Image 1: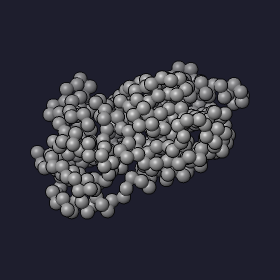
Image 2: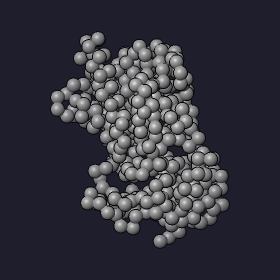
Image 3: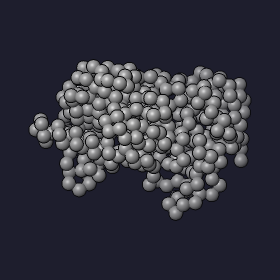
Length: 374
């Protein structure tokens, strides 16, 4: 095994062994706390621009297969694990995780103390870093890191969005048509809607309100995605046009941040973010606490208590993270629109929040009954 090194922008350095492709990669270093679902993490477009540290010590035990991909490729810019599996063990495995990373040209490092690295990121915050199996010159690598762009101000939507529209057909009887704006959508999301009789037209991020209206959409969805929401001006303007037409809206992750901005709220970068499948969130509309899947480094700035004014009427915070009181969902009170910051589709689980797709269907049904749209 060849040597590799991880260097953070504050100078903290970890030495280990090369894992995956050999090379050098520079990106923001973040940690993910999921014990399972590493394939879903790797293929989530929201991880574009990030080197992901897995806090679970053993990664790759079940190998890799194409069935569990959330998109057509691996999106992480780098991968950090402690103890990679030497031999995958699963009847579904088609190859080892190491082979997948090599095929997808993802540079990684193994054999380091990921617990110490995670504690460092929790204390200092997510930061830029470099993984290299080409050189051990720490001073040179540190120079590369400190000259690299930061996540704040980044925009990767052109990288991750679909180049052409496509359709995911409803299962069984078709009930609704939804225009899903692809900001980095995960494959399970339109499937969850299709299970509820929704025909999903997935559209590029550059789509316009005319594109949506031509579909005769009963509702509009905006997906998860990478980068800084403060740079996604087109998506914000598009959503404002959707809200002016009182089309039912549902947003997930970046779609929640876009909703917040469309309502006049700001966004901000979290110190180290929420990434994993074990985050407790309370649905304030029911009082229920859910264990949920997250992948976000930014959040909406909105008051937790009471309502707040928007150009589209009053709104309120509907969901909150019980670990740190971060806003995890917002909704309009007098117009058909809501969003959540986490991932109710959660292919790797948990599935506590799957009801939100039913809530969206109910919202479209109630809106169509009052407007005659359907």
